[in-house]
Image (cartoon, rainbow, N blue to C red):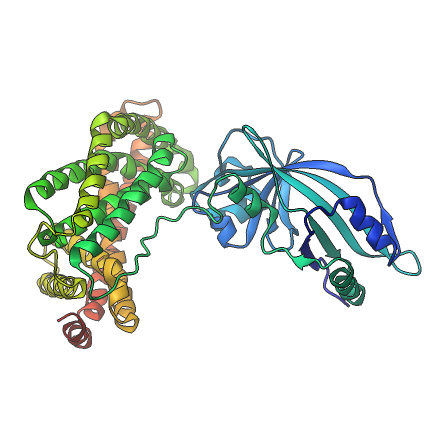
Length: 516
């Protein structure tokens, strides 16, 4: 037996109409032509293209939302859906297969419309000698619908196989190649529509991905990295202000942190006076976005945390959730005012000019500007690594939490340095080092995050007590805080094991040999 839903999508030559395709095929094989009709579809994806990356497409058509394989257009799961707005979180859908399938791919991200396509379709059925359908065809003439009109897209012919008729499918494919010279479509209609309307096929990435040459000047390398980080900040600023989903703010903050790390680690590349001013500005950007992000994380993890409450007390935590949401609204408004301000816009514009001047003049402003980037970066990586080893070795059971927090901060500096300059060092050295560092950072991150979350919940104690249902909510909060404390303690117990791998003698030797 053949494989059900075998599919192929072919491009039609320019100027070849649907009726001409039908006439050509009818002269060669038995077909039945049905009435042409028009369908309109809206394609959705996350800002960073998570569905596209997973080989999936989310399509809205005729009041139905369906998740399908991008290559075959075969539906995996779908349901009737009434659009609630210009964005959709998986949690907005009712519990069921579609919601579960989406959460597995997009997690906390929202999907938004990325393309609207209106297509005239002519269905054709290929028959065998007994009049049975052996292949289903659709001639599609699509246009992308945009605000000021339409953009014609390449017409195509879709072949959908029928179980048990693989030979007929292959015969038809050969015939189409011979009689019409059709070639396989390189991508889906949705991708054509996204590109035709000025979008980015596959979404916008916040990843660094900078290729550097080991011998290039440090100021040139620094400018390339900082320009990419500024692009990521600008890329995520609109979504942050629109509160499309929590990942926009997360990616913006990561880009700000990375910028601050490079300002600090390669400060000898820059003129010191303006650098000092910009470091203060970016520190402020980090500060004004912090409370909103902390509350985002608290709410994102709330269900998982509350799942540990006794069955009878599951609803007691709801006043706490509402209070967290109320505080998020207040903090977000404050953050948005600051990010929309003329001052923030001026900082980003002036920083852009400062980056450009690093290379436009051809003369670095700092003493390290002309040094080969591999030499300067290697010295910093080696220094930060040795500092981490010394800090970690001094931590014992009696060390205060601040010692672990400081180790985590230093680890972030090292992680960013390795990310910035990974292209100038051997992958077989950098990759295992990053892996060991990530293992250590994960437990240090859990240790600090649980402390932040517990302290945040404790700070709401008086407000919770004053609410209706406050006493029960206060008790539930106590259980949640205790669980966070337990998870923090467990993370601390794992630090020594992870640090041992990171600071092993073989690793120290490798760092010395590679980075000097």
